[in-house]
Length: 421
Image 1 (tube, rainbow, N blue to C red):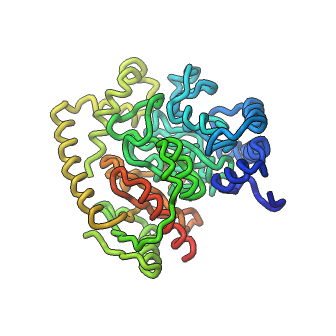
Image 2: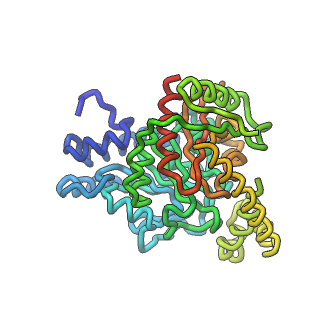
Image 3: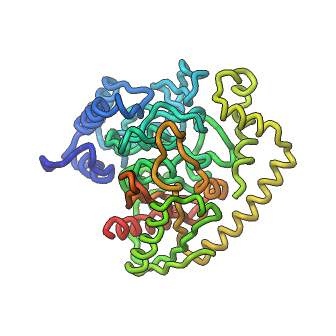
């Protein structure tokens, strides 16, 4: 390992290679992460539970034994919506402030089995909805990191951990990735088990992840999906890219519009076929959340934020007939997207309106993410630009349902093109 290497900025993929060659120890990497957390955590507040002594003991145990798997020795942040047997899990709510699960969520168990070192729990908004937690954007702490996977995105962006788990029910992976300037990946719906994950909306909840590169999210996803093909991202083709402004385009800020035009130009110059392509999610989420959080809604209404309580009451007021009608409409729209993705390899769309809002203005609006979550298609956020406040800006690449490997391969190619532009 070179003396000049910064262990807090090394990619997970490169760290994995060094760990596998025993040129780097899990303890060295863990100590670097913990030192960075000690430095940044007071102002960023990305973590809800940390046990440094236990982490270092686990790292030393990994160093003494054989290579456990492709995540051997890699530190991992886990959003506080996932159950963890050795760390408290509060789901971002005071209702569960002393809750200690007896078992790991499936995603956490798979990561540990592959050798990952769970560093701690990362902050989430209340039940992964709207009410913000304490987390600030590490790029500028006057701004929000987005939500609901606030802590996971901030921890990766703040160089505290190379990998982190998140969840998305509306825009809770893609939007924080956009605001914090990291790669965020929401896989196809159902590709990763949600066992042990606090449910919010049964047809929408999706396990996602944050990292420093497309290779890194693919590495983590290959474990969670048990699919080694995801680590093969070589792409030699000429992608057909549809630039999709979406019906919400009027809400975009100048920095997102500039990124859109820059991406179209750069991808065309790199040989891609780039063309322009000349939503209904909120009621579905409200209905399902009213069911998933029925216990909390009925027994602890005074401990819910005003916005969440209003959403749950609105969802409870929807009839089953209305809910099924919304799902039927969503099915028609999903078929249209599938038709587009027969003509194009990927769609390129906004991830957010623009740069992150100020912290006291909330966690931002998921309007550019809701439809893709509703349709269950995979998305990757690519950070490659800056806005007028010096904060990150990027776009999301959208692929066909269950065509995650091709999406990741093309996203990796596109990221190289856009980073070099």
